[in-house]
Length: 160
Picture 1 (tube, rainbow, N blue to C red):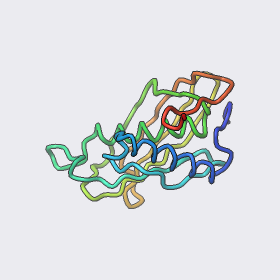
Picture 2 (cartoon, one colour):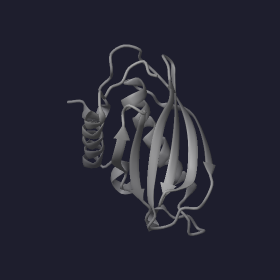
Picture 3 (cartoon, rainbow, N blue to C red):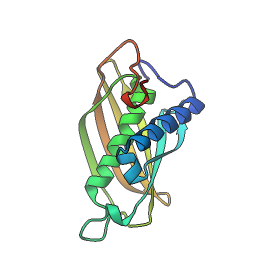
């Protein structure tokens, strides 16, 4: 399924995500403002789940959570999954397609499951679904560019 996996099991994924998101929070990155957090993973199946509870900070003028906020959270989930499970290397988003199926409201717990569909030497494709109370609300597909085929790079936030 993949060229290289950075994590070797679910425990390593959890540790890496807690370290990375924790470092981002200390630096004041958007994870802190958006309460973006690791939830669960299945290394064998190739997915990682993240969670975000929608707040009034995320709302648009119609009273729903702004599509740009949802898209940014999904892109982040996909990118972290591409890096951690799919490639083990820098893999920025090249393309993203998104379908908003139902609105998301203040107080809703958004569970984002990012799943590796294909990981190759040059690209990695990730599907990300957003569920609220088990109901699919938003789905997306992202293509990531893989920048290295050999040694994994240390994420900037984790570098000493």
